[in-house]
Image (cartoon, rainbow, N blue to C red; front, side, top):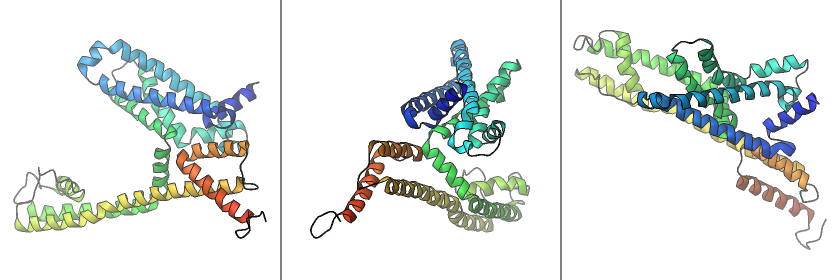
Length: 315
């Protein structure tokens, strides 16, 4: 009975099989609760609102922590029956340890840990109150777009590190250069290389706050060169992420098209195959329009091979 309940719970969390609709409803409810928590935490920082509605905000926090804690424990218990962890050889404890150390599980833990610490230690831990805003990262579990972005970061990690390394070198060079040119004229603003890094950071990121600017002709020329160089450097990480994000979407569409191609038999799809493809579509985060287009394209391609294009008879 326990194993059956655990398998059912795992299917609900994965949104597969007969529990696809239940999983979708659960995800929607948790997303709404997370957004409500974020709004409440932001409003709690306003003294007038916090003073008047403190009991209601505290009640919402207690209920939310209880729900998130129950969700966390339930996912930890049922993870051994999820397809990703069921394939791991070894005991259930080993599978649960793999899940416990996964990024999504750590995010779930971080979402409830600050509040649990606040309840255990009766102190005014303001930084823990702010850390509750990290609860918004739980949305990465339910948002397919966020999962695509995280995968893009993972795939381009080495390229991004290389780009940030080059930007760090430019930051140091720009700070040293402006320090040599301006520290005698503006010792209060460019009195040291660390102080000059504020100007270098604002210039390299093309923000240009204007609170610290070079005054000497050579300093202005150097600042212009740094600004021109930064326009190309800042665009590199953006371009890498945009390209990787687009590639992730293309891969998911191609994966779905390949799955449709494998499921098609005799030029048609039965109800079980369509259900399987619908579950796959939901997991991949594709829209119904994209999925229907892929299915229609594959069906047309398969049917074009089943019938003679001259006489129209089945080959």
